[in-house]
Length: 393
Image (tube, rainbow, N blue to C red; front, side, top):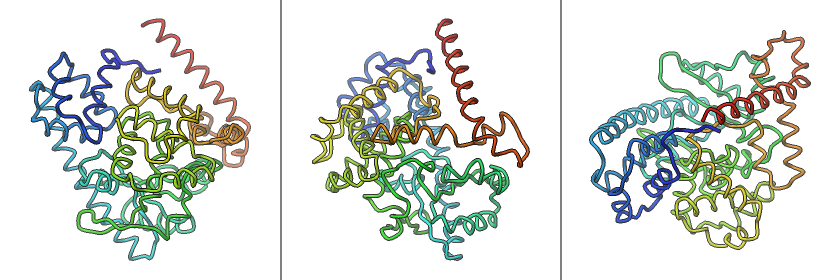
């Protein structure tokens, strides 16, 4: 557990009140007149990637009660973030133009597209890279297009990537001369794990959004609902920012067929992800449970237990807590699927296995057997470290 001095659950609850989709401004004014450590709350906002939402709420309140130091810090963030989002939008348009000219089927998600979709403004959400998805058979063409624009894969050569990185369903590309990176996806989760949304279902239902000087394809609204629920669950909902995204979506798309979306996710073995996203949005951000799902949630003890645990962790741990090795198995509804997914993850080599013990390519097959022992050792060391920190505190 990561523990941060000065943080308490009251600070986190104030942050939740500030960034919920429809803040109660009068209640906020009352809270902000109290004894509040603005520096701590602002640290939390930045740690959960909620700076833009905090900026918007404080603007609505006229900065009431905020010390000059915090006001200056927030304004500095606003300026830098605005420039960053304009830059990334321009770069997305450049990439989209090349992909289109080469006949590469693609969609953008997260990033600027999600900010516009949820908040109506590319600067109303924090993001640091460009996320694109292509059909798996077009990955080589997409790689070549990115390389033609000066991007380079920073995960090793093709053989290394196929051995240690391909299971993730994405590759990462950086640019030596640009402050931009691209995550090129062909799947939404690691191989062998379920996900509420099948990447193959996207292509006949794409929407188009205007971003900067171009129009780009993005996910249909039902697909976006499943993506947000699945991504947050896969990552253990470690960031309040992901909950805010789902809450904003659920608040503005109450007319979607939510029981149908839940049934669709359940057929893929991860319907609980949709219920968990709804439960967290309701508990932390006061967003109503979508019509038709309240009874399902009331009957689901697993989801209610997970939601309570996640809320407790968010209130007691610092933002950006470490991601543990088997967090992805939260996606699985059924115990047997969780066991099977855990086994798959335990025996799938990753770059960390190679860097811990570099072996020549002819011996790479040994990593399938070595990985469980490395995981066990790293878990033991982490627990020992946490125990030592606890004793010191």
